Image 1 (spheres, rainbow, N blue to C red):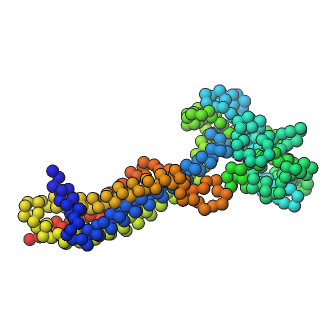
Image 2: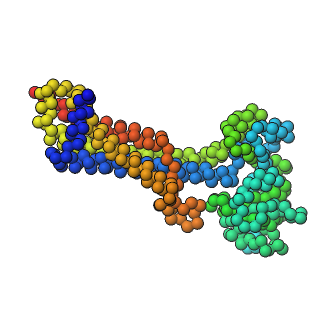
Image 3: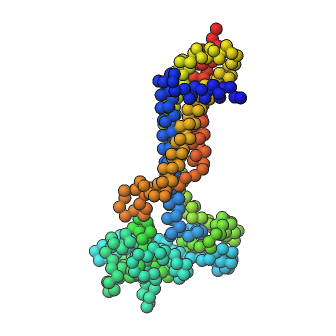
Length: 406
């Protein structure tokens, strides 16, 4: 039998004697439980936000993207493209040309992000489900059309009914500007008509216009060079494996980015914010542990006679020290277990029923996203263990000194 644990259980379960000390112990237990529950819920919300962002990126980002490391525009030989297309799991390779240009329509103008794509983009059905109005095409009867973000569409006052007045796009002619020639040739321009309206997410909707690749090439004068190649993979294919295979084909001149790497800064910011919240909550939990420290200290003072009795029957210094430590562990871990259980239940309820809403009109989701991860429970348990140990050491030493003092 573990004698220190047996005595600690008796002290922890005391309900008749020392009612005030028992009350403080219960308050400590509840405090730890509330902190643990709050920490589990907050970490789960951050996990849910990260998972939501990744799911959102999946709607408009490719599985892999090839970009050049040292130049904004480049081209890849047909031979190497054929080698990439031949890789098992690669379904589409979409060449893209991206840049910003000035949109003009009537008396309105705005700077938008243009993305030139070829027919393979439409064949892959990318963003087809995000077309909320209009049709899904980019060319018709010799005219160029565009898929326009809903924010750009509304801000510019575009209309499908206006088939006479096209939308203009203006782009600086860098060759003329290098010669310090400021004339009508210093600006390149092109026109298009809206074909469909896209609704993906706010940033995308407010600045994106998807146009034909040759139209975009005429506008920016890219001389058939591209800003990237977007690769779509079959379901269930390991993107890391394909990434390594493409690196072997292209060499070190190019960067092949996974979907997460395309938004590395944003995802890293979420992880850093989650880490700082975890540290702040751990600090708050440490402050709350003062209640445990005082409850153990009062317990040692109130149990002086009992400790003398234990000394008389032969308890050792280490056994007495362990007894007080066990009392602290029982108080904290009882609260921690309750906190984890309630945290799990509340997180599951939010994940299943969406009880707490975001309160944001026209948001993509109605309620706070939740995703529970095992490591959050593990790290929370380690924090509780550390704080409990630090809060229990001094009262335990005080009990040994007071009991064995001659």
